[in-house]
Image 1: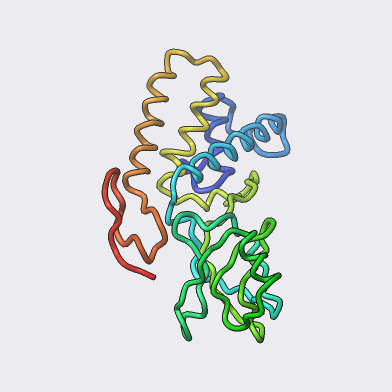
Image 2: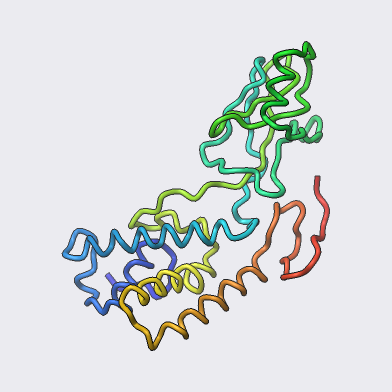
Amino acid sequence: MALNPLTQATVDLIDKVMVFHHQIPEARIAAGGAYDNLRSRLLSVAQRKLTEIINESDWTFRYVSHEAVTIDTTGLGTLPAAWSNEGQQGGVWLDPAVNARRLHWHRLGDVTSRRETGTDAGEPEIYSVRGLREIITWPLPPVSMTVYVQYQASVGALTDASPGGIDVLPEQWRDSVLYEMVLLEEMEKKGNQPSLPYQLQMVSKNRFMMLCQERQGKPEVQMMPRYAGSADVGGGY
């Protein structure tokens, strides 16, 4: 199998580091061979570096828009399995086809207190998140209803496969940022001192380029790339 020169999948990233940095013959790098321990370690490094990149900013590509969640008559619902957090611009809305009103986030203690002492019924107006993925609302709806959540997806566990979970990152940054960050850590482990300053400079430059060029915030708000120091533009709800 020919080595893919582009980092389109997790397996591509691992293969490239093994061949270009560790100088292992391409014919010997396949999973299930003598270098499985190295493949496993590189997968772990890639996971840490991907998480670091993802958590660096409020990237637009992390947002999942308008995913339906059912709220039952007890005012409770379960958020999607991929839900991580709301980011800076996520939230919960009533069905846009009927009423685009946004629910207001309140502290969990406030929502719980109102549910314990209040008697209001009707469309939910406030919400919070309890535990990992339980949404809790107030007032209690008279019938089960649908709300729509916009949120940042969590970073799943990478696998030594294709795409292997690396597709959460836009393709243009898989080579220039993620691959180079993994390579930098491997160079540090190997003690490749003469090349470290250049590699560190490349990683810093490419991460800054990503920060400048990649859109941030939810898609409805940010219609153009956000450059460092610029103000948010656009509309939305």
